Image (cartoon, rainbow, N blue to C red; front, side, top):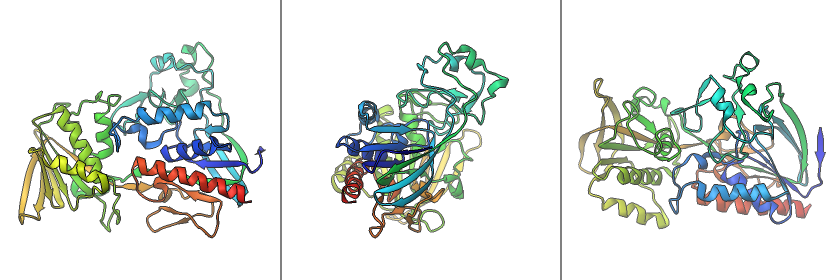
Length: 421
């Protein structure tokens, strides 16, 4: 089916913080917006965080406001479980083909949770990066938008079970739902497909995926979050006990030609922020931060200086060579060379957090449009071919505040294309 609303419209591909910001800014000055998101809820990686810079506030602080602005704005049409299959046309007249996967739950859903109570099948929670579980029918997270359940059809038994259907009093579950496609006609397109954490299992010497007490920075965010798998308590994954020591390993795979040759710019600050999580829960814990170079530019330098005054936080300049696990206690020994002292150091800790870099989602599945990508998979706006723009972490690693600023400017570019046609 083809839907045409004229050229005063923008298609935003990606519903994370950058995509939502672009959509809201364009819609609130009078332009129609189609917001396309492949996940079952808007929000992207930000909603999985515990806190984010610069104010170190929880995602509920800012994301919920964006949800409300989208909900009350009739110019924004959002599609979840949707992926773009093709983009064709010229500035002012693009056709975007979208495939929408079945949710199996319709608009009648009241999020009463009766279906989840009845469901006998469990799945790993992608919201908690596999550290927790949900049922096959689940709410993406507690402030999900849209606030509607979804069925994971890779594990659901469908008609062989149907217990959720029987439990639902509102006829909200439709196990016979099928994929749908539509084509929208828009004046400009914005690519905001975001990023994924690097697969640390590829870094052999750091033993992620082999030692349970070695986790990534994204998992650490979920451990510290009140709605995470441990209700905000930072516990050792192997035995769920309180920790007395922890190590943060910077540049885990980053600035390394064998993995990610670039710096993701936010990892140093993320680890220092997470060190404050540990300190708030464990006032006497020993914290070690192994680094190549600490990068905390601009106003964030003060944050770095403040942590240096903590006598139980040790900054060790040196790349980690290996991590050794005690088979009995599951304690870890981090082995590295302290460049400043010229000595090899061994630090025994309860947990290790790997600061893995940001990988652009474009490297996995490039958008079916005329978009230029650099050697790392980041999309590049081609100034010679206006009309399709990229924003946020789609074009470079960036923190949340920088993504919001960039997305606001990108909304203006998208509008200028429409006005100039």
